[in-house]
Image (cartoon, rainbow, N blue to C red; front, side, top):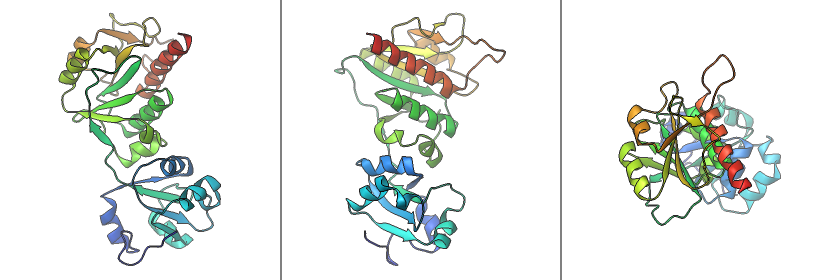
Length: 264
């Protein structure tokens, strides 16, 4: 493993480190870092704690030793000085932060194919959980509005537990135009929203070429977006609270789709 010198990207100066840190995203924790090391994602550098949990984990060290990375093995005082506010399990990997791509044309894409569009989900915890759920449920991509969505921040990616590596992320500047374009490309548009016109979440076929839309925390899907949906689905509540957290609702819908596909 190569070591950093004074001219390297990571300088021991904390002030300099913070300045450089803005140009990339840092992912920490053993599970998330294992996923990054197994992927082809561009790694800028790795900080690892001497004697820590990560350095004793074969899945971490075998992947690090099999490739050429810029790796710093830090003593405890140095490591804590840099990462005292994080629960890192002894490893931090710094990666390029550009994961979101323009939405491609899916006209020739055959079914089954499912995209998830978030219409106003801004909380980074929810967004990260939705990414994680979407990847686990086998969704083919996630569409994020440029102006009505949480940023793809370090917090979001950390919560996703590495899902962002495997889940294609797309960005759109105009939700309405995107929905209209996807309709022309053969997609059915399904909104998840409470309302008198909404059908039970398990009553419709979700196995085809579909876009599932979920709304933001509290506000739900915008009225304009709802009007563009082919149909709405709702998850009836059995308790005194009349709504689920958006990430929980996403889990229910996406795994209902998964169940239907397994039954077909």
